[in-house]
Length: 82
Image 1 (spheres, helix red, strand yellow):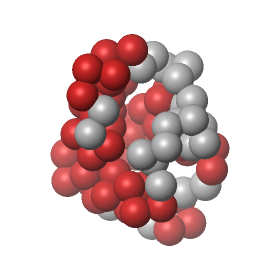
Image 2 (cartoon, rainbow, N blue to C red):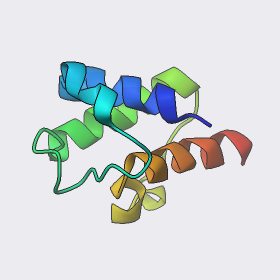
Image 3 (cartoon, rainbow, N blue to C red):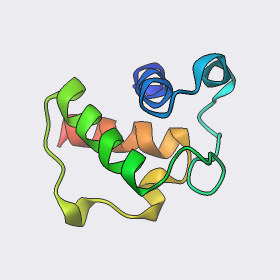
């Protein structure tokens, strides 16, 4: 549901350019996109908070959140409907 918005934020934060167009819900993130390091994760979380108007607690984040573009979009959807 929020897949396109998440892809746009990923492209902006990671500087993926046209490569972001190839991202799908099944595209792996952590370990697959070199630009997604610990600092990028912090920037990404801040961008999600700003874009969608929610706050993220440390205990809400785990590796599964960043497994794929789809899991990250599902996290956003969960935060917005919780």
